[in-house]
Amino acid sequence: MTAPEDVVHKNIQDIYEHERRTLENATWSTKAARKVTEWSSHVAAIWAHIFFFAGWILINQFVWKFDPYPFTALTTTVSLESIFLSLFVLISQNDLSLEADRRHKLDLQINLLAETENSVMLRLLDKIAKKLDVAAEDQKDAESLSDDTNPKDILEEIVETEAK
Image (tube, rainbow, N blue to C red):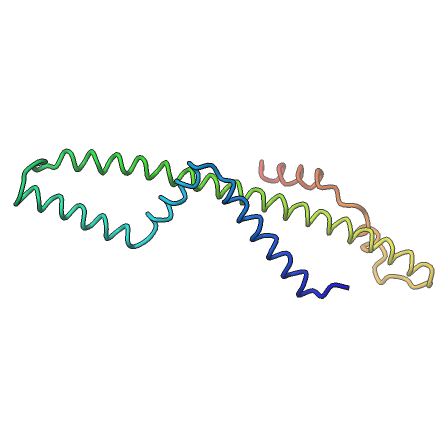
């Protein structure tokens, strides 16, 4: 029999292997978007922008007036950077959202499997209890819990409740 620690270790390794393969198989545009988003989310990016803007303004004020006040070229540059950065962030967020959806579906499947296994075990325990002539404290609850759970019915109830 496998020790629980071994199962946990294997599951962790499987998850990291899946993430590694997902990153490896990503398109070049997705990889680029991740790199840009990753760099933009560091303090170094803030400092780089501060130095760039300060340098632009100081050079234009005191050295060479290639973009005099109100700094139209700088404004255009910053606007274009904002547009592209927003697009890179959206691409990265979309990618992360897809991975979160996959994990959610995996969680759902595992939960449904566990629910089915629990129902089977409860029916088996009920048969054992009857064979041993042992009555459950609350037979009605035990019988209803041993029934198979229908996810479609639960989903419909959730949708109806949300609509109210």
